Image (cartoon, rainbow, N blue to C red; front, side, top):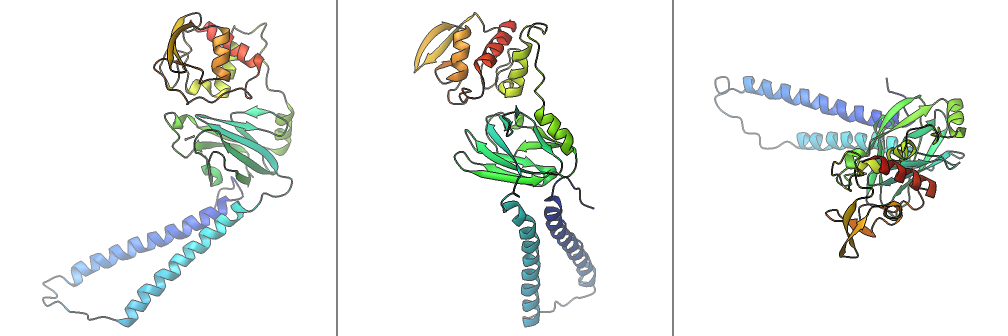
Length: 310
Ligand code: CUA
């Protein structure tokens, strides 16, 4: 009766169903008694009110029964939660999850990096959770898993996925303007397919034959730049990429306003040291350095892409 999307579904759903059944029972029972009282003790049928002075038996019953019910809820809740907090099984696949405003990056043991989480079907997966800037929260509803990610704190999450398919991944902690952009997927592959996927190189864009800027465009989307920088002139959290290359802009450098021309050097500096020259009208401190995320080659590709957005 439970979905088998992860090894934790049954524990969580049992607690939920137990609590929900009790709620359902009392909703119906209390409503029924209420309606019955309206008829039974209506003034016409019961003109003189009966005063009840107290009943030890009743007092005991409505103390002991609710305590038993609440302890039952606690028991099922604890049983469902306990295995999540245990250390992941030995030999679990380690994937590093990096959250930042406003994207996810998943790094596999061989260095491969994606913005969608890929996991094998039957092997335990251990996620090493790192938040770079503010508190995020990794939430996979189908797996019944959610874990806050506090900057500077070591957090972990583990699971066995069980059923191939695609499931939503959300950020469940409001982390600023584009919090809702932190929506991605976990793709569960049969073990053999996962091994093949992990070993395969990401499809390379052939620079010689592809449209100018194609490789950079792919990087901008995959790295999450597009969450803050539009390609069509729309003002988001950061300046749009459209029509900036070769044009003069006003920036604030250490609080002093100056006019510069957007060139290769400026784009490179803005990626590696985003706080150095803040375009007038935008806030500093929102973008983290991409120094260890993007290579020189990547930055050149992104620059080529920006050049095409006239
Ligand atoms: Cu990250 Cu909300």
